[in-house]
Amino acid sequence: MGAAENIPEVLLKLEQVEAQTGMKKSYIYREMEKGTFPPRHKVGGGTRWYQSDIQRWIRARRSAPQWTPEDVGQPAANCDSSGA
Image 1 (tube, rainbow, N blue to C red):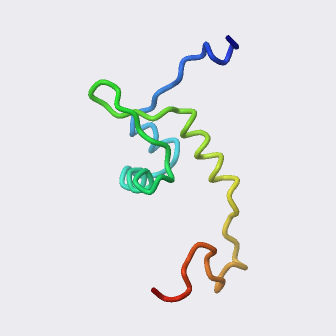
Image 2 (cartoon, one colour; image 1 turned 90 degrees about the vertical axis):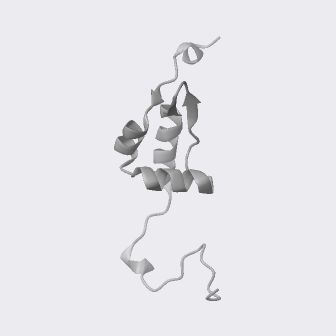
């Protein structure tokens, strides 16, 4: 077993997830439903998230292409331009 396998996983409460991501509860749950946010885990009577999952999600968002002023007037890559 490697040393990393001996490190216990840190579990975060919703309030901690909100603080680390800067996102509100409604956004977190909406993104979970879409499959774009780390899943929650039931622990006892509460809900928790793995801190490592949240940190990976934050890093992935930081590495995503950022909006720039040059993007104004350009269609979004994932939007349907048919108007439907």
